[in-house]
Length: 229
Image (cartoon, rainbow, N blue to C red; front, side):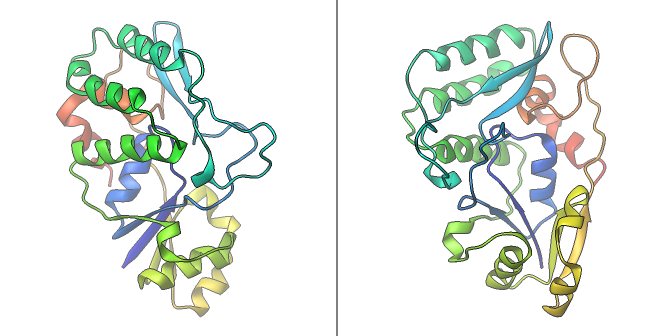
């Protein structure tokens, strides 16, 4: 049985969903520390006529110290939701499948979710459904495990009865192979493919949010993501 993990990114890139498809269980690390630095958990890249279009979900951080991802709250002040939706509609006005998906994006961004995690999981669940990926999503908080690094991942694998853990190739060095081996768990490297697909606005930009792929390629998104699996 293969388990993989990921932090709950905002509108993740296609590799997030390929990793889910290749796993028997996909664990969302909702109880690890929310990074102080810039993070994919609260922002991602899209594309417009100027090139890369960044969108950020504002969150409450000041005076709160270290927070778990599950505790991070959305800041509803200002009109950032309307700005984001206008940016989507402007950047992807001529995308063939914008109308098919923009309603779901509007519903999520317009909802009064209190937690960042809720926003991100709503988008992730929507995309999983569109891509027909039925791998069970399990929250770390549901497993009763704590810690970080190798011990945390081993405890997650043991809680789910996993014999293999799939880890990003670039992150293999951060884990202790001997510790996994002693528990009878095999480390499997995951290397994302270099996808190329039709995009709006000129030269291709890699690793944008999966929404860019869905807006432009619609039902072919699954085929494109799994082509190199």
